[in-house]
Length: 494
Image (cartoon, rainbow, N blue to C red; front, side, top):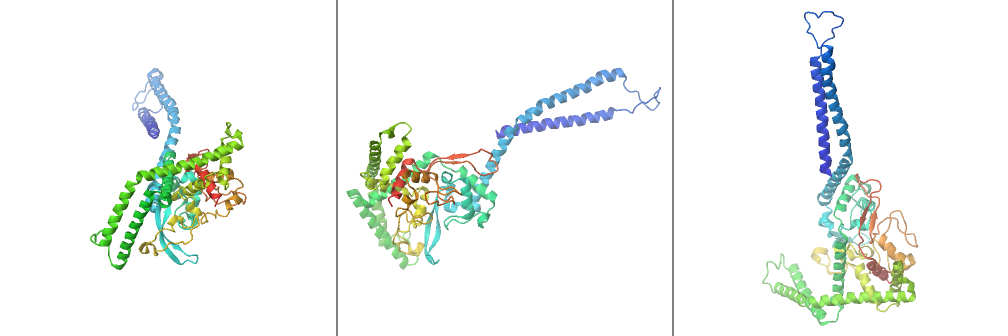
């Protein structure tokens, strides 16, 4: 369309040039051939030449002038409407070109200007940033690696105006304020250009589903490897503990000996032991891969069975739920049962599934609730720390409280039950998220738009110079209804 618009514009300019030049030529020759009026002279003066008589003027000469004028009028009458017929194409071409320029500028800011890529990864795939953790009084605690969520699903979570707001004022004390409104270095136009780039890198629903499923699988694997009593799990734990022990020996050696490095000192027995332990762990994981895959599939099957029992129980209590049009009522009746302690056999298993979704590590926590509602989750506060990298060997937190609140509110102690009267309203809030300027729940909290939505999002007021009245963009859900329900059940039982 842009090419077509450019071609039409070129044709129009060529025709305009032809008409203009033709007019100039006509004027020039007309002036050259003009003669002064003879006046009332009866006889032509000796110094004057005779001009054409009336017969000539009113036939050939007049016909030529009228014919030329007719040709020019015909060209104008035909080409001017054709030129303006291409005006919508030129407008669309302008919008496409503006989008391209804005997107390219946004990418330049993302990669080089503000260097968002350093935290959020290439094409917004997620990453991490080294940052200092302090105590309440500001004393240094540790240098940690903080998970920075993916931005390639950002517009499924927030509207573009909410993104602009966050870019302006920053978020959770780790992401700085970038916009002039929050004291940052970027102009409003540059913030919009970043949004244009973010808009261009959003992934589709299939890729989102794959990432969520991979994160769930990793969570189930971690759980089974740590808790299963099967022989394969016992062996993996033993081999893994041996690997941790040899790695610890290498760490202690590097503290005692300046410049100690196993890539160079391969003959050192500690390095050899660590290498052997790594090979043994790899061999054990390869040997037991099928058993682990089977255990994961069986565990997820059991979770589905619990949900099916709840659906059957809800239908038994109200047989009208399976009538056409009552799908949502059936869903929420099932969810109320799964959220109520002791109502369904195997509920504990279902709640464990909800916690795995709550803490999903995929894409640096993009799909996770714990990222905001659990202090320490974003920097692995309970994990093994390195004195060299983090300043401590001990876990940052001795008491890790899942859902205890941080950037987002505390979800424990029945607070979600107090805020949301029903599991249905709770699920609806998680799907839609928090809207800027609007409160939510029974307590009338919120209004800052910081809580993302995990359901599908339609943005009816996108930003940018090419956006017109009525323009909107739609983005896929990050979580399915069933996944949101599992999180709701988990949160209502904290």
